[in-house]
Length: 77
Image (cartoon, rainbow, N blue to C red; front, side, top):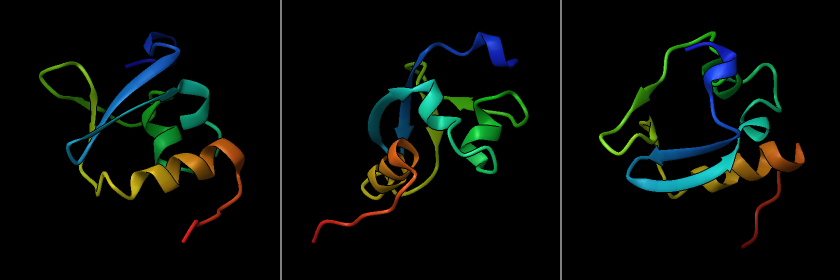
């Protein structure tokens, strides 16, 4: 899928947990696999609902998204 075909808001299914995020967030770290996936350099898979599927721990993915949003890693204990 080419870069211009992705919607501005991306619906994700990460290990069964659903997330919505901006396309620009997923592309914010140009060296990341998520950037490669959502810029057309790497294939993506969609589930039966049309969400982009990522086979990882969905409960931990929120930390990845927060890093991409702020380009800073923080953990609330």
